[in-house]
Amino acid sequence: MIKYLLALCLVLPVQAQTVRIVTEDFPPFQTLLNGNIQGPMYSVMRKLCEEAQLQCKFDLLPWKEAYKQAVDGDADVIFSILLEVPERRQFFYLSPSIVNTSYSFFVTSRNPWAYSGVQSLDNMIIGAYGPSGTSIVAQELVSQRAVAGFEPTSLIIEPSIVESFHQLIIGKYGKTGAVVVNKDVGLALLKRHSIVGPKVAGDIKQITYGFGTSKKAKRSDIHARLVDALRRLQLKGEILDTLRFYGLKASP
Image 1 (cartoon, rainbow, N blue to C red):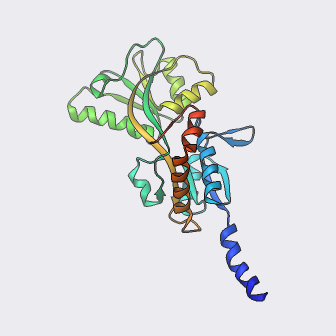
Image 2 (image 1 turned 90 degrees about the vertical axis):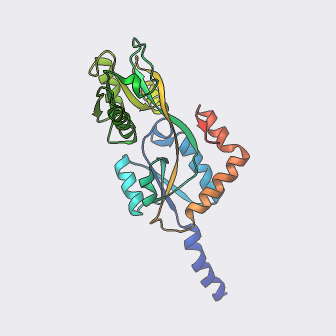
Image 3 (image 1 turned 135 degrees about the vertical axis):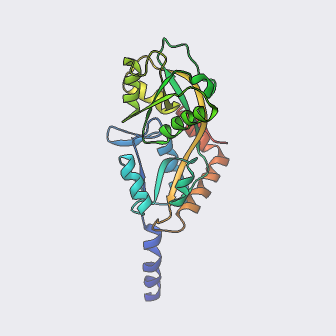
């Protein structure tokens, strides 16, 4: 009996240890609604925890705080994280891609312009939220134009995506101005804030989101268990069904 209790004491704390997962308010992927986290990526992460038989606790925080806690190991996992940022591999084990989206241009409803490559940005002012992955992409476009010898394109960094939409509407970027936004996020924020006018004017590049497991996580098996769970649920079609329900594209 004593041997059994000793063995139980050794095993249970590890098995029952809660996996802390942090995220940000990032509609439509995850958002806080009526005091509860909701959204497709949140639903996916809950499914992964259940499939991996992990006890998970979710916290929604401002992005900078969530990211710092995950880097420091105060949180074990973070989502939705852009997977095309090489620097993040320094701090995280990155998951396979889960959802596909794109960085896109938005313009006012009266602007007939559509993005067709860096050469189509002549005499334009671009707005973007930053510092962020979005502003990095926008800066890359400006840099590509400079290298190619095109006329300079101006980039204005705004404190939020919503602010960039408001500035677009009031004409801060001129009649031919545009903003760079994650397309799904932009559409969700326009709807949430009842902003009328901005429309999609072409995709810049495809991007993917997933989750990152901190290299300082409390347990060394978390990432492998979550990734294995993801593969099993992808094969069953459950990830595809969840994302389709929300109108998003699952990664193949």
